[in-house]
Length: 79
Image (cartoon, rainbow, N blue to C red; front, side, top):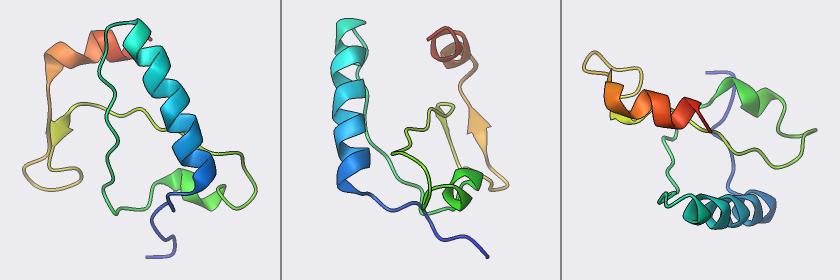
């Protein structure tokens, strides 16, 4: 592995809190999660602003049992 997992920094926490407040205005519950896996964006993190990622709802990321909930795709992509 040539990229570490993204670090949870003060900047990313502040960004998440802002996003969480905006989500509440849309009657969404936005939760924080970590996978421990290195996303492509970590190669930019040292030079970039805090990063908020928005992924699919499912389980088993990058595993043989990986799946997503189809009913969650439209609401998440419409945002």
